[in-house]
Length: 146
Length: 146
Length: 82
Length: 82
Image 1 (cartoon, chains in turn yellow, orange, brown, purple):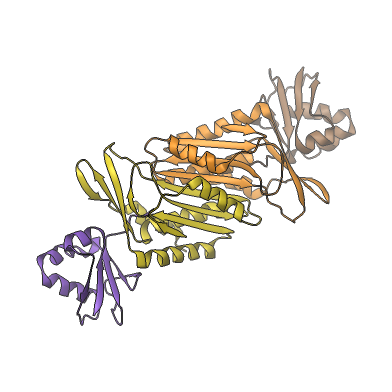
Image 2 (cartoon, rainbow over the protein chains, first blue to last red):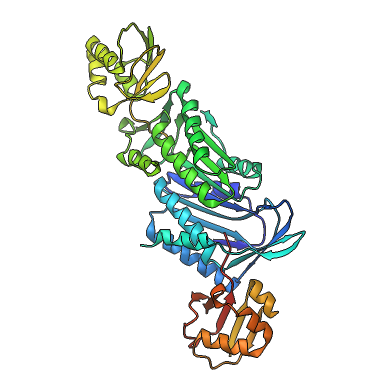
């Protein structure tokens, strides 16, 4: 797990992740990018809660390990000032079988989105706005109830 | 879409794919690797049906475009002789929203697995064996019935 | 005349990847019956149709599909790509 | 004494990221009531609790949670990472 302000190279991370596993048959990755919704985004500022971030992510990853048969899991999340097209974060999972890799990556994303302490602010020509959480994001968590 | 015997670099493909889209917020990739099941795999030989392969993949990708809101979709599948750890194939999808990117990549994999004309043969110290299709792979397709 | 293609273990059992076949079969099933009657290796390869798939002119179809003006019929085991 | 942290628009409305608070509140809700009574900016920031989340010692919890020996209580809007 990495929480950092520096940019990273998703392709290089994917290749390193894929070659690190033993007996891996399936690798799923997710990358989240800064969208320029109205062609007016000057920057996106991502605030986080440093003392809580790593343990929150670790708890989510731990839960994924318990639920699926994984070979490895990776989470990278940036904070600080980003621009349109920049990579915000990345999740990767590997497993013998594709169903586990897909489900775990999907799960990690749903939980990181609503349970890891990051907040996005969009700065446009019109001003600054904190991104609001979506009801759909909270609802997505119930997919994983058991 | 690319169907080729040459190796390819999944990380470089992911980066090129991610930077090509307009207003993309989410990119999901899947890479399938040759697993060395019993530590005895000499090689995996992938046979395909050239005249049918591209149109079968195109039909599957077309179906994904109709079902989800996608910015782009990528399929690369190798044929020929591969070794343990080699990348067999890759799928990538991009969208404004993560749910569409995840569902479309998952769908593409299920259909490519059972509907694109590729056949795998494993060559081990014990001999050669065609990989058998799994009932689970066929069953997975019913997830997408509508 | 129709091109008949074989892939994977079907190709190996029959011993060739492709042949031209003179046939008046109306359906794939009738073509299979003609092939099985030819030689033991065909009878073996087609002994369990449920283990096989067929494509007519590069489109997956069923064994009761009509052949019509088809130019290419391919037999193979279930796909195992991905 | 407990450290109280604010993030995102909660931080902006209250005007500081962190402060030490002398409190005898038994629950988070009691602490919120004490803060709201202080000044208008706190009253505004905490006017709609349903729009806020709270973490006690870096663990997400509910507003009726006890404070106990907690050393750090953080208030913030719903997370929007990923």
